[in-house]
Length: 153
Image (cartoon, rainbow, N blue to C red; front, side, top):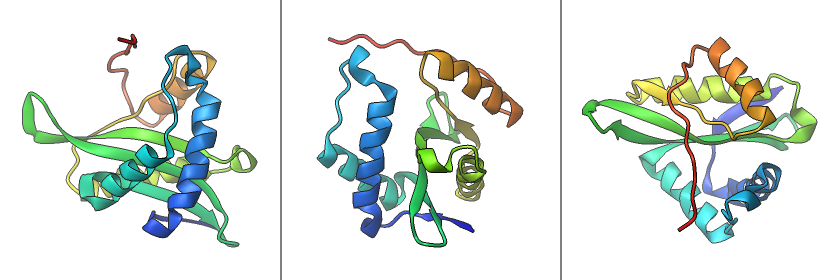
């Protein structure tokens, strides 16, 4: 059995471990976006303080097997519309191919709606995973919005 719950301060060490794995899997060397443990800890605390949603999935042995996070932001052209922008979505390799990822995303959407969010934005990284995630997002009702490019200053 898998439990999806809000992350707490006691989960920070596990979130940092998963954040490190998430960063390594993304291969951010192409744009020199580094991993900083203190920054991730501060981000987790910021999300936990009401600026977003930070969920974890744990199995019946209390092993954390995934996480998803999103931050709230008003839509710049109409502040009555609140966006929840996904910050990360990670499922541990041993739990991929199970419903854990779907349950995390569905739980985040449910909580965002209850909190008053009107829209959800999910992201993906360029490359082969982009097409696979685009198919998943479209099946779940997401529509393509925009594509981002990054440049180092």
